[in-house]
Length: 289
Image 1: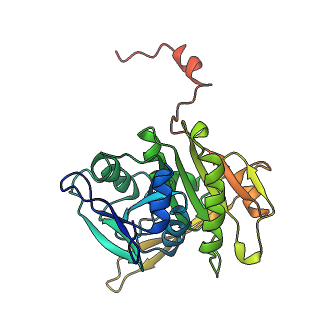
Image 2 (image 1 turned 30 degrees about the vertical axis):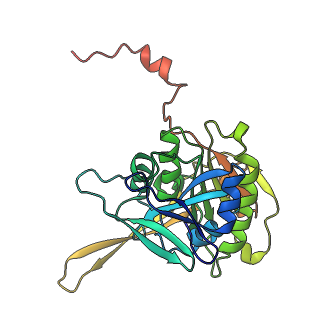
């Protein structure tokens, strides 16, 4: 959602959906039958990656921001089941408004699909741009990717975008490339079942060498726990690492391609069934007696 000079009211029916003020770019997109896009992330609603991505997505359609109030990095696919979710509309940046949710990234998608946008569901769920890459097994920890997976749960095409951590994060450049990718992969005939994780290399070193469609790496990463004592003498532990693979990752994995300076595009699925092993375990004739 956005406002500012020249804005118009898209829908002001009370009790139907939240008041949305559209920018001239969104007005034009809607008149052309463009997409309704749900934008979320795991870095929090005020994160620069989300704002940069929003400013590019409005060129594709009507964008509704529903994102966590506070950073939720590495929360995975956690959802709130023991406490209510509070949501409020806030100003995210100049001319940009969004819905802040005191929950997890997956919560944001749920409340958007089931309540805020239920009368006009999104055509596409976009998550990001994450402050740091999400390749290898970090896909399983990522709240950014989890938000996209949550969208896929509802049968919605979904794409998660992440930018490799660097001293200078070029979110604007990544957002422009994200829009270009979405223009290609989110065409109506390609949307069915779409679930992608896209990672951009460190753009401060120059543009990507190209785009590689590749598999998710499964190489473990170097991790450690640092033990310290608090002022009262109680031990606590601080996890470090989680980014550098142990040994050589698979040459065709997202880890390798990203390290080589390529933008990576990885198709995902949330069905975790090991189908190769399924018939063998069925033959075990396991009994519960």
